[in-house]
Amino acid sequence: MNTDKQSTICVRLDKWLWAARFYKTRAIAKDMINGGKVHYNGQRSKCSKIVEIGASIKLRQGFDDKEVVIKSLSEQRQKAAIAQLLYEETPQSIAKRETYAEARRLNIANNPAPDQKPDKKQRRQLIRIKEF
Image (tube, rainbow, N blue to C red; front, side):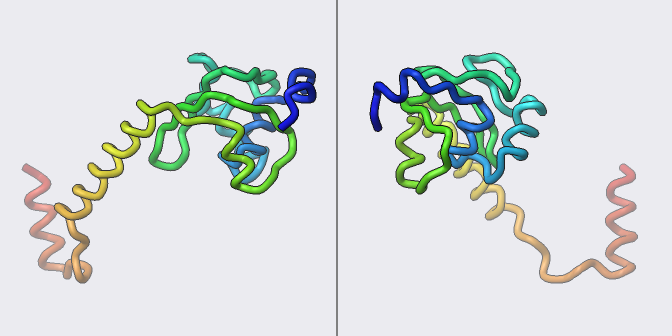
């Protein structure tokens, strides 16, 4: 990536999130920003915010909260390998995501899905239990 070219480039926040492959479309990126799921340098921002190298972005992606630092700018969507060079996830964010993922795995192991739907008698028993 050419640094001379990047120092003069102005990229909107929604366009950078799309180019870095956090969201599949710019419309989804825009909805997430407007919905408060993306924080730029610790504050909510608008889609038209011009991003800078070194800024931190907190975003929600599925079940995961990520905190990344912008390393490079791009307004074009490229290969995933190149897109990963645009940012660096903080070590605290990685550790936090791993602990939450482990907790989700343990929760699934402790609460297995039933083999079949409850019949009428079992549904009535569940309703009686929930009333207390």
